[in-house]
Image (cartoon, rainbow, N blue to C red):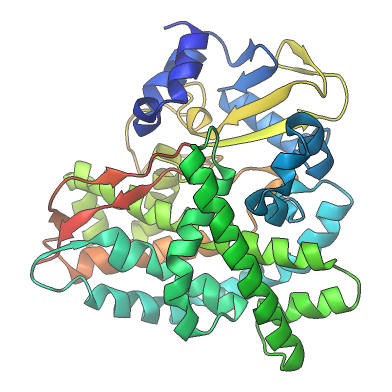
Length: 398
């Protein structure tokens, strides 16, 4: 398949369902491909280099306005995110990241283990119904959402409302989003912004030991603007649940396809960290990211400048046979496994350690609590490329 056809097919619903053959088709034409005003990076080495290069910038508000026009950045979903760490560059990115990162220190994340274990055990009770249940609806979505809501200080009574809003808001980061996806993301962003304004007001009146209170105090002290405060809270909600939800769902689907590997993990729960890394590599919950060069430079053998968008296919990099032997084989015993699923460099995912912890707890719990856990019906993937995961994963636990 020629590279233009492969890239075009990747933007279709059929291509998004299984992008890996298309990644391979693109990689066959080279680790870095120039297609018009876009540069596509498929190799692990080049992807890692791009993500770690400080000259590579994310598309911030000014860049997006120049590229796509003011109407795009005025959309509620884009307006909410463009003042977060996701869409800012130094020095603003560094300032905001330092404020937010305190919630994700190794000590603080480790301190959440008991609470995550208790929440996961409570949710697992919902699978023990004697009949088919949706693993996504009953476990993979509510577990990380409960954890990030706890960190943000969202009252338990409001969390049911958050679930559909957060799912719709995730459409804001998708490539080639449909009109319906974009409209739902905008509506969700407006609802989320209004809610967060109220939550911040509550925490300013009565601060507690949660991240919203901490960031509200930073905003009161002028360390964050009001837009930055709301944008980062919205981003934490989105990234804090969507990535982990996809990691759990994708990982369980992989185990169902590899029963011998599933039996090994059930028998040896201490293998969970290695399994989680291989889940992240084999079917990454985040597949694509992009950068813009701050100055003329070379990527691979290709000269680029700020007019060229550099699209990094994380899913392709994680399947690069030059980096991973038998890259299309699921192998939890894989040595030196370092997937790029959480990115790298300045924009490495703040919540990566928390996502890993939740997954390391979830898989052994499910496998040992339900020795006969198995698929029961056809899984349904969401029609998304950037955030890859399932809408429904029907299972039977008894």
